[in-house]
Image 1 (cartoon, each protein chain N blue to C red):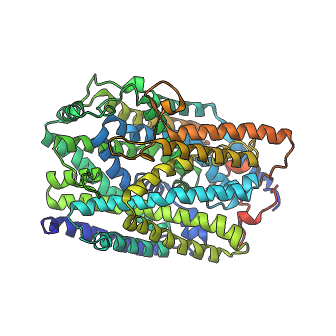
Image 2 (cartoon, rainbow over the protein chains, first blue to last red; image 1 turned 90 degrees about the vertical axis):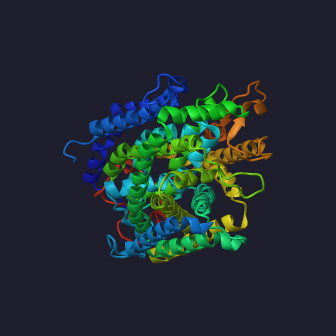
Image 3 (cartoon, chains in turn purple, orange; image 1 turned 30 degrees about the vertical axis):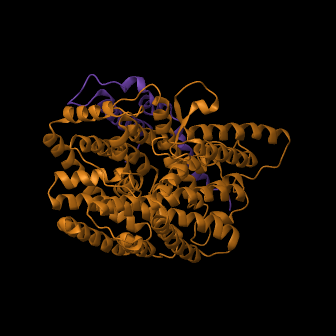
Length: 80
Length: 551
């Protein structure tokens, strides 16, 4: 196997945006759902759900929001 | 008696037959030019777009067993069972970057399995073999557990027999059909079926979580009923909130399970089948829809408490089968035809992951054992053929596990499976980022993590059921000599020890100048995307033939 074409190297390098500082945001939805002190309580209840349940379901939105934001901020211009 | 459940059985059977027909037709769907290639049979041509990937990976990660066992856990223990929610939230940001890198390097080099990657990255066939065997051993009981999911449904419908064979006949037939269409259509079959499975599940669960609280007096009443039950029970660990002693367990179990889940060969198969990096990244934002679903499904356990569901008897005298609470809840609260749809959703829900898992295990065997050790010059057509046959063998093995052994054995094994698959984390997940570890150190770390994990699991007993060993994954810290009643997830401890051993030994081996294997990848490989040139352009070349470092 010979080395990849120079052109291919360029496109791959431009994608090295995986190193974007935006990626650090991904730690938020990894760390926050793992802190029981935030959600391990009954009150306040929401629609009858104790906090333990509704707040952990809210973390799903936190996860979706963060990954979507990071994806939008790190994708190449001109991509769809 | 099954006659009381006739409507349910008819609806279940019709939907099951519909899906089976789809499985066979799938071979023609997005028809490949040459099915006799592992990329086609085992990875669906690496061509799946956003929607297909969403259904496929969602159908793959959230299995029938999950749908049955998580509410059963909530029914029995309360809040501790809700770990499935943080677990499936944490996994996506974790995977967002890591599996994109795996996709890129696999795309470049034509890797089909995680062990292919390890083989090339660390130049170590032994390490690759360990990763492959770990993957196969961890996956087998997971497949068997899918059958436990179907059995819970069949039991509720009264489809039981006097002899072991008669009792298991329906699942033997179901798996025979599954084996036949997986053999023929490969990964395309579960991809197509996943559409039906997930649509059914979404409809069933949405109806259930709107209708049942209305019927049972509202969410507040449901949680209060659960609270009353746990207050009255003598067990110390249950309750609708966590207590001081199980919080570490809750957090480490959620985090450890997330790490384990994306190391499982079947998750990687689902991800590698996608078309490009964009599809993966967008899916990491969209897949949490399933986590919401899972959270709601988990709460069915509390609804079962509020509705006074009594689980059916278990395999042994005096025990109960907690897995039957959700099927019983549907049987009790809904018209027969709708319960039939719900049962079909669970039954079909077992088929999708079972098919993907057997494909993933078969690919591991073919690429990393058959081709590496038995037949070096295997052609792509031979590879595909061996994989197809192996997928059959794997399913027969899974059925045999359920028919001839106590189902509890599969549940224990699956528990072990999560711990052992975690031991491939340094080589596979960290290997995607760094080539720093020495191959010998990774092997030693793997062995240390496995040994410790097994020992810890062996130590865990459950006084309530009288089981002395392998009774759970919550390791009491007092066995380490700490004066505390707190527990921790075995897998996390084992993988930390694994990492420490691997790191220390790497320093030692480097200092001693022990030869390390060549790295067959370049930094740019980890960013390659659809359309970039591949190291293995034709169908006749593949990664294993590239023994020398490229470029």
